[in-house]
Image (tube, rainbow, N blue to C red; front, top):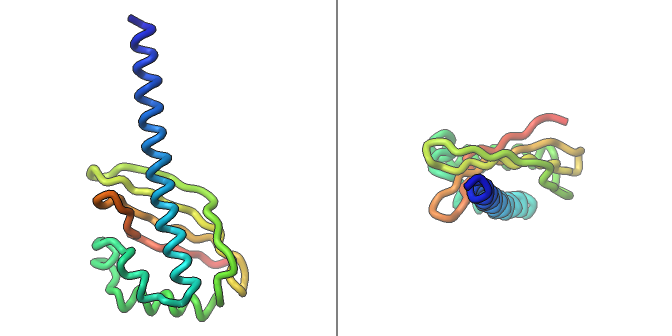
Length: 132
């Protein structure tokens, strides 16, 4: 009986781990799309990636203006790399925070995207950036 319980715990833990890894992978793909859009300077294309929570907190015009301002202050994105992540579940929603190191023409900055799982798709809830 103990052996069966142990195997069941291992199988359950493995299933949870694999599901979590898949979620992070899917969220990372969305993060890559987010940064590629910024890189191309087509800021309006960010809007479909945003969750309703993000748009309720900040109107789309303000999102676009903020991205344009960030671009004009920091310059062109030369590269971006995901450096870490964290996951949590709140109100039955899967939240994933992705940490990035983003190199602009003016220097390298730490940034973070928070994404939420909606109908087998991840949407951006917040975009945080800091000074050098």
